[in-house]
Picture 1: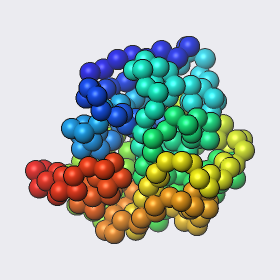
Picture 2: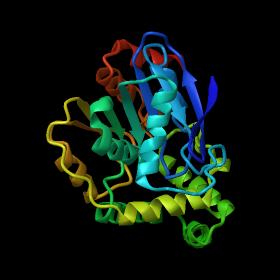
Picture 3: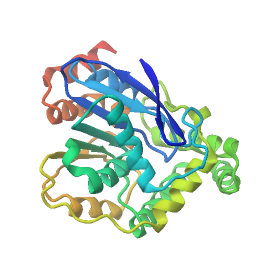
Picture 4: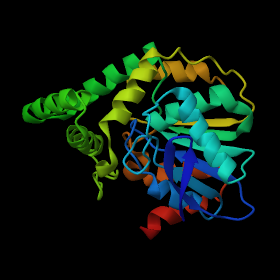
Length: 289
């Protein structure tokens, strides 16, 4: 079921897989500003949980009239969704930038959370975000041909200048890079057509200026953090391990940045363990595909 959730000037394109009487997991996609890609995760969780996903502010299906990309507005978007569905507490699952989005929310509204699953999360705000972006850039440069490098640099510059189509080409190449070396049917599993330059540029600018996230030595709920052995980050991951000393941190073998595509069996086993689901469900999910 699709609903449009309003938060002041922003209209959030929201999908809910209802499951009466069950706890809710809210999924946060990556980017910033690159919607979806988490359909398989939603499908895995849906039999045991109510699952909500949404296109974040400023993407094509979730327009924001004032183009406000403040962290306060991002936090308010999640609160607006929680209010719409009468959620006092819920789980957050975040991938990549969505994993950082979850951490930002936890810094402000931690008592509302039942758990966090951070899948290949970006490492932090401020100087941590800057370092992460450099590491990601190095990853993509190492994955591309000379021609692809040239196209990516041009598209990056055009995207910074406000070109939606340039960023769509850039993130399509990013997705192809993520999947190089892996046997993947859907090599671009994102809604590329929904990418909008202002959302990416506005959010990135805010993250660069934001203060670094504080330590959370005892958040009061379970946190699982996963990375792929061939993920896109470097030493910046140390900031997350330091921030959450009680978290369960796992590196998934034979996987990169998209573990539900690269090593389904290992990833879904971890997901099942985190959410207290039948561990056999992971094997069943892979077998059925």
